[in-house]
Length: 340
Image (cartoon, rainbow, N blue to C red):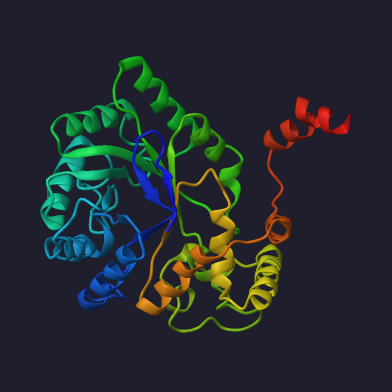
């Protein structure tokens, strides 16, 4: 396993992080324990969960595993707050109000069986709560010793920059990390999110690096998806055909399969290795339903893509940037320098 600095926290994080969303859903406790044991034995040190994963079952199973270990200080624990699928129209148990954050954190700490969360993440930008109020809540939790750092997930560049500036202005804690969707299929973070994080020394966790299974090679043109797959089970509308497939997706998959055949490795390892070459990513967040799947994906650490293979994947997955990124790319001073 290789490690990278996590923003400016001083923490070293493994290049592969492990997400526990399947715990209590498609993965029972016994299998979850086997996955966690294997991941840590391979050198992984960041475990990611959320209050909303399977009504807290993910946190509960992770907490049971932590209580059974002799050491817990060799792993970093991250959880999140925002979602609540049971919240009704008048419920305040959702979003990032101080009430919900504080109540949710207390429940998360109890389920995990720890005194403080290493990384407490705001799971999605909440338009209904003033960002200064949210930042003050996180400041209070850090001062109370309930969390060590806080991060954000699924935020826009403008809000992130506002948080950075408010942190400087008020001399308070700023988010240390961004968890963002990033893969060969989703490259829009390259336009602004990743450059911003690099400039402000914000750590990055890439979620859905296999695009909900689309980059594993399991889906075929003009064929129904496997029944035991996210698309086959209709787990999430976001991953369904019409949202994910198209000429660009199949071009990416064609290139992935060619490289996988030459390398004699699973298609998923090619997609993960492409991400490993991105210096702007602190850690790649993977999940697994079973040990076989986890072993196969973590094996991507044992070899590296060539420059030419990376170029071919970059080319196949290239997407036209919208304005103003396209204009800046065409007319920046660097463009004139290249022409000269």
